Length: 246
Ligand code: PGA
Image (cartoon, rainbow, N blue to C red; front, side):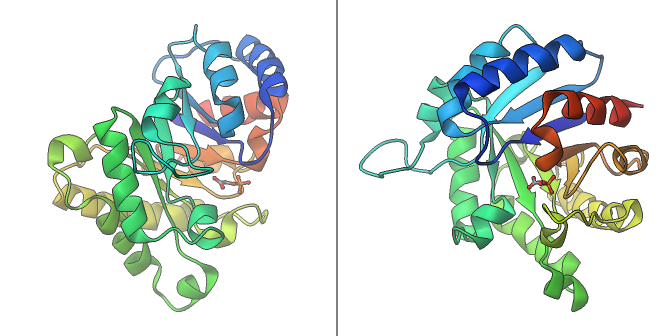
């Protein structure tokens, strides 16, 4: 079970330290439950430091650039993210794809750079509403998956985590039904199995909250969640994680 919090462009270092203290006190480690936080790059080190005593917690970058160093103003390399305490990173989040123009080729380079640097890529895939309405959901998510990772050796592919996040469900209050999500998870699982990595965890994301998490996590296809809005408050996020742990 993976409970991942994507804080997007929120929570500075001091807020993250306060958050960590409150949240970790409320939620002691639990067998087979992994907690992951994706802070802003300016808060990455504060988060990693505040959570370092907890073996059940990982901290990661929301995005990385694939070059290891150089004149790339504004970008964060894998080695820099690692130096700040990241052990994983999101790749291909829909906001990166649709606001910042990240392409499938970019996601492939980022996944490769992360694996080379020893960080776990959390690859996000998901269709837009018009693609869903046109019956293209499966084609879109499988294209995004294959583009990012089909050239990888199986030993590397096995290190990934996948997050299925329908674009129309992110930050909209409109979540996929557990059945909708499970259907897409099964397609992704089939593709991963064909690629030789049947055990890669697949998370669901998009307007997950305390009221809907239990029904999502009740589906065996859904092995965790990636949550934005409902993860920003430590008390609220502890409640969501508890409700999802069952
Ligand atoms: P949301 O965001 O939970 O606010 O919909 C999810 C995400 O973008 O990962």
